[in-house]
Image (cartoon, rainbow, N blue to C red; front, side, top):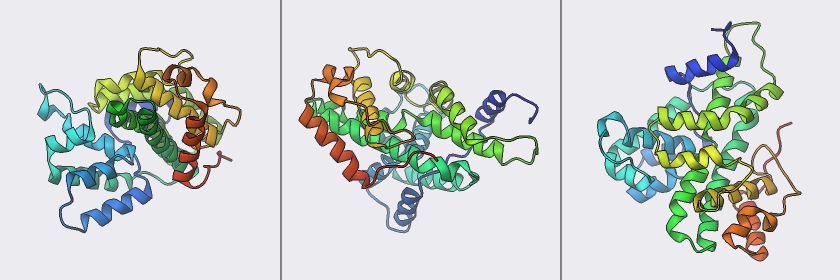
Amino acid sequence: MANLPLTAQIDNMVASGRVHLPVYPAVAAQVDALLAQDTPTADTLARLISHDPVLACNLFRAANSAFYQGLPKALTIDEAITRVGIEQTLREVERACRDGELCPQGQFIPRYFSALWQHALGCALGARWLAHRCGFAALAEQAHLQGLLHDIGKLFLLAALEQIAGCDEPHIALGPQLVEEVVESMHVEMGLRLITEWHLPDEFAGVVGRHHEAELDGQELLLALVRLANKGCRKVGLGWERDDGLVLPTTAEAQFLGIDEISLAEFEIMLEDRFQLVAPEPA
């Protein structure tokens, strides 16, 4: 396998299902605490799952599996929990945490994972906040979910590269610069592939596939909400990049959504307060 091009190795790992995605440690600890209690309510489970992209993906993979072929795909966390039931949902979140423990902890997961998770959750919370502030409360849950999963391709690629770097082949050397280049250049394509491979709702493809496009399609509210949340996270440094020069009120997304400068200032404060600190850029 080491003789294959890097992209071919990653493709093989997708097809074989050999990549284990880590659950954020603080969320995994909450899962352990939940499992030690009596059966939780669906609302408690939904809130927990909504804070981690891996938990959400595992639940959707179960709720939209071949067993349910012919039924409409579950589009929300609540729908997925209702379909599979609380007991199965508990098993899925526990499985996600245990599988995540198999993800190698080399140099890349410790270096980048926290920033990726903060960015995903920041975009989720930000898109939900913006939906409410801009008068689109009916879209708030979908905005949160699509913000949470818009960069799932990055997390998969990071875990795959960590696994490749940890193999026993001495001539395989992956440096941080190459890892960042692969993740940035391939994450949209990979995210779209995972939607298909993992039976995620097709409706996610629009945001996953187009959140980096230069032009904004003014007909897609969810895309605008997630794109503006994405830019807000970059502005305050939640993620791999920080861009202090971003002026959110002048963005096409802000103008399309009709949100004013005061609201956007409150939006930035909300993100910073929620995470208490600004995520550092990779060294």
